[in-house]
Amino acid sequence: MNSFYLILGSEAALADRALSKLNEQLKDEKCEITNLFAGDVIVGDIADALAPSLFSEKRALILRDLQDLPEENRDEITRYLDSPDASTTVIFVHKGGVKGKALLDAIKKVKPEIIACEPIKKEAEKQEFVRNVFLDLKRKATPGAINALVGALGNDLRELQSAIAQIAADAPAGTIDELVIDKFHQGRVETTGFDVADAALDGNLSAALIALRSALETGTDPVMITSAIASALRSLARVSGTNRGAKSFELAGQLGMAPWQIDKARRQLSRWSPAQIADAVGAISTADAEVKGAASDPIYALEKAIARITSLQAG
Image (cartoon, rainbow, N blue to C red; front, side):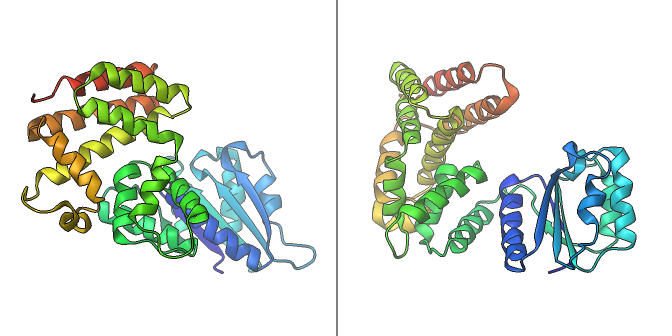
């Protein structure tokens, strides 16, 4: 392994995956691993972790949240950078941005292997992420299965990771297809979020609010409800641009959706115009930000978004 690694970027799921892979390599090499969180260290912690082993053993330091390192601890790193120990591997994890930039620049001068972990926005990149996580777990998934997962959970890579791990563990041997993904969704408590989405997209406010309360009472995270509604709206948008005469099974591979999902979206589309879909997407995007911390009352934020979406029906 290299002497230095820098995991750089704000996408926690990518950073976790990179760190997991490096951890496996370190364990294979029988390294003594020290994990430190930069915001919690006191003077001497880093120097101790980087001191040569008395028994000539391989050592590794994983220093997380480097951007939070106190000023008084930074010279312990810069001194080490000037004369590193060949038997020690150091992995720095930094969320990016300008905080701690001077130290970051000093680390970059020793030419670490940089693993970029910037947020993924493009659908193709999310699909590649899902494909690779399945391969990490020694499983293969069809393009349709991958697209279905991204469509349902693509707003949160950590949620995607968790779903993939559960599917890989529970699915029968062989390639994972759309049927496996559908079964997985139907079996989750969070699936009740799709009940909320269905009622909202049908314009039934009372049913949507009742489903919302039921979902919350059975443990569904509000983030999963916004994700379900956003997924349903993406399905409407995808299907709205297709030839109405095409069979749903013919479109399934192209859209990355199961035929029944396409049929349901077509039924719902009779109530929606493109402008209304765009308005609804804006409402749920705002709610998503609010339930993730921008609002003091995430439940009210959800109710407000659902009320807005149900009011948009074309009739």
